Length: 213
Image 1: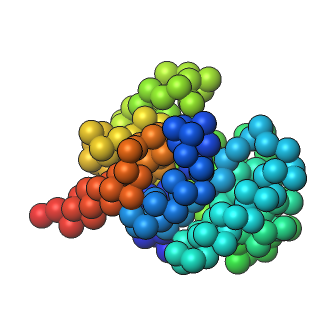
Image 2: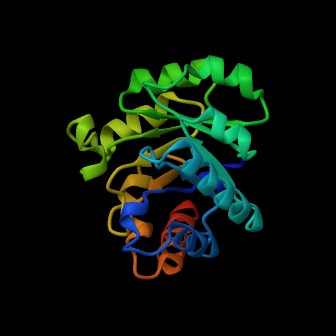
C-alpha cells in the first residue's frame, strides 16, 4: 500500500447515507479521490456482506482503489480484497498475516499507544488511532484521546498512523499536525450532500498541509 492510498481512508456505515445506496455514495467518494475503502457493516449476514463486498470490489477496482474488509478474513479472501482491518477482538495479526501472506494489507484499530505498538510488532501495515475527537461511533472507547496522544503514538511508530474519530473539514488540519500519515472518516463523507465534493475538499486540505512552507 502506498502512503498516498491512505491519506483519506473511508469507512462505511450504510446507516449514514441518508437512504442513498451505499455503493452510490462510495462511488462518488471515489470520484472525489478516495483511494482506500474499509467495508465495515457488522450487522449484515455473511451472504449479504459477501454480496456487498463483491459490489465494492468491482467498484474500487474501477477506480484503482483499495478495498479493506473489516475483521472478516473469509469475505476478504472470497472477493479478493486488498486486505483486512483488525481490532482487539479479532483473530491475531500474526495469524492473519500467516494466512494472507505478505502481499495483502493488514490494518489495525488501536485505542492506546501500547496497542498500536503491539500491532506493529505483530506485522500490521498501518493503524487507525481513535477516537481523536468525540464521535458517537467511538463513544464506547471512552473519552477522545486528543491530538497530543495521537502525536505521541505517531512519534513512536514506524508504520503509518491514521487518525480516526470526529475528524471533519474543520478539524482535519489540527489532526494532521500530530504527524500522522492520513485520516479515516465516516460521516464527513457519507452524510455529505455531495460526497464527491466532501472527499475532494478533504484531500485538498491534506495536500495543502503536506506542501505547507
